[in-house]
Image (cartoon, rainbow, N blue to C red; front, side, top):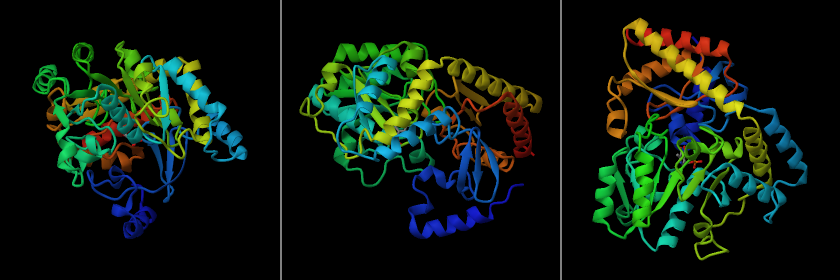
Length: 431
Ligand code: PLP
């Protein structure tokens, strides 16, 4: 049993000065009960909290820490950059280099603009798609999360669904009317929307592998069918690869599945843990972005030299070490098959979805292919499982509607420890 006295005190104090005590909703543990743990430091596979507890981390800052925490190559790059000033507000060589590297790695990107978060990337991408097509509407999928831009807080996943506010107050009816939604993996529903809104749909945006309703996999042919539909209808296809970019392959899900969208949005790993996002795509579309074109988008700290140094170090490492992906595949496959064995031993049969180093367990026996099937999961049971794992020193995402992210710092020994904890937790929550 680990104790949480100091975290509990800090959380009570935090609630006096920060809404809900946290700077991003899902950190608050509302979906799983209890109080969040306040972290002090992290190294490799482990995080350490204020009460001195150590956790095996399977969220990795919600994705960025693919090499584990405090990766030396990233830290060194940051240390080298700091003495040269934290920000110029003028162009730098690093920005050219990272743009060239991203173009080299991500198949769909011919030109790229750096921003400060995944939210900024998706907001900007749809503005550009609208400017480019002269159309207003977008199609998104139920349970996909694309950050907290107004247009996306319609049937959104992640924290929005966890807190039960999928349609946030503050999003105007006018904005909501321009966002059409379809169930994930349902091409017919998308076709119906496109038909009913002929020549009005600027973009279809999706997570090519969804992490924000738990891990959901595109069914065979779904991405290709969307590609074909967009080609026929003059719609901009946007892959939101904020989670999957540089994680499922050096070129993200689009490389893994061999489907090239018109635009892509990136975040998380691209900054190596610093606040960075990016959007990019075909030259003819990206040349609509100011100052090359008329669609305005800007940022005081965009392309920040420290963030670019961290991102450059991370991406260069990933490009030069393809074994990262085979190793992550092997580690995560072992974790998932071990969980399946555990369930078999305990007479349980829950659904586990996995692609590469991303996976989720759903406490349901039916296949999970979209938001409706994700919602058949027993979230109360998930909450008990989460807390049991936390007590055993394993830090999972504090919501059913999230994916886990495995880092290269997870050794075979830690997989064994994880599986032992998983076995005991599954046993406990069914007693
Ligand atoms: N898009 C996806 C697929 C995400 O998972 C997220 C965040 O989790 C975002 C966009 C928003 O990114 P950020 O939190 O950096 O604004």
